Length: 640
Image (cartoon, rainbow, N blue to C red; front, side):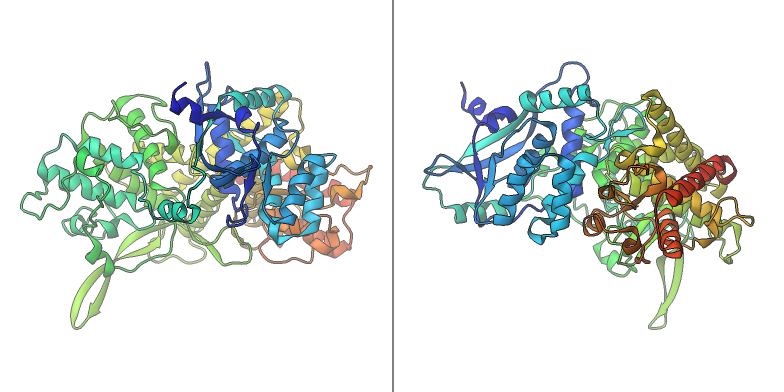
């Protein structure tokens, strides 16, 4: 057996050993982003998943760096966050029946790990941890809810699945795959290793080359000097997702790339501009880009210092945006459907066969990025925290003139995308701008992960096809396209649940987050109607969608009210996992004292509770009927 083979361990082999997390290691700190991505990766490669159809290969999950103590237990030097998360997942799936990890000198964590395996049920243990409110195990407590209820994107259809919602057969397939096909590379350190020195080396090591940087070098390899400079300039600008593209391409902007008012796009500039006489800073080759000391030059750094910065954040990172762009280009220009997965982890490391003309692709990438900046919502603030200010923005660039020291200068400003310059609160275009903001932010908080954003891909593809000659999109057309996608997704959920003989409106914590967010959007639309079409819609004021990812029973299940359907949609709302933990088992009257950061459905439930000083069977059934009435009005509310 080779040394490499000896280092590779299946998960079943990994759990034959015992591990300890030393005191100098921090507590478990993974959040939904990391745990959810781990679940997504495991599912993707399993027989159930997008990449696992047919014969499943081994999936290399990552590495563990270990140091064996004298008692034979392995001290985890690097990789403990992943190992702890995997430990909890394996417990949920029944792969583990006893704990294999301990934490040095941390009794709260030890009690958690013991309880994880000794409690009568997952729900019972979760409730016990939530009642305990111990900050030292806060992330571990949150992980219990994340593991069972994180919505894993299936990749094949516009749907998702949770571990809790899987059939026994699906769980068995996933468990078997994790046991025997998921590999950790276990690297043992020599007994005399200076752990402190090792950590210093690990912390000071350079970042690995990313796959999209390799793609860039490959696409530039056949270009001439001037084209290489242009390609690199545009690519680097497109990669800065949080900055308007007109700011990062100031040199080309000043040559007319974005038109007189900075809000257009003239791709002929790229074909006609000549940079041969410029100072060529970036001559990228595979050899140079692989040089560990290599860094990218920022062509427009000085120009950008003069621009007005924004604090808007993109809803997607560049590697995943690039996957969207490549898939779109392959389908729209080469008629190759689904040629690229919407997952940056699957980025090719060779030149894509559908890109025969690199300059044609870079122009397409730029056009897609301009459309994205103009018509896709961005976030301002923290959507995870209901106590912080938050705004979703849909804005386009606009030429802004100012005077300084007697001279006139121009900057890139931002105005609402569909503003006509004289809009008022009653202006139709401004109203639709706000409506698109609500709709896109609803989809973003539902499908938070940057991977598998099918809604975003559908919208970008439609816009790409609609804007061959210019980048102008009619506001009502864009609204119809996105609302149609949302309606299709809702109808798909109905069919899926009907086919499984499961009531969608009585699913308890298995209720899709999309449905609850969609109900909030419909309530908001109903509040805009002159004539009320559903009870309490007139109580709704403006609100912001947030990353609420935990389904809560307003009347807690711990009340054991046998004559009440606790899992009815009339008793459910979305809250943050943090709030779910802090409100766990509190009565409805206590919960209803909260007035800030409430989305429409939760707001209405709390107002009813405060008004009646009660929330029980009658209120739940009446609210259920309100939701059914609201959903019956779906075609009257949507612009489809």
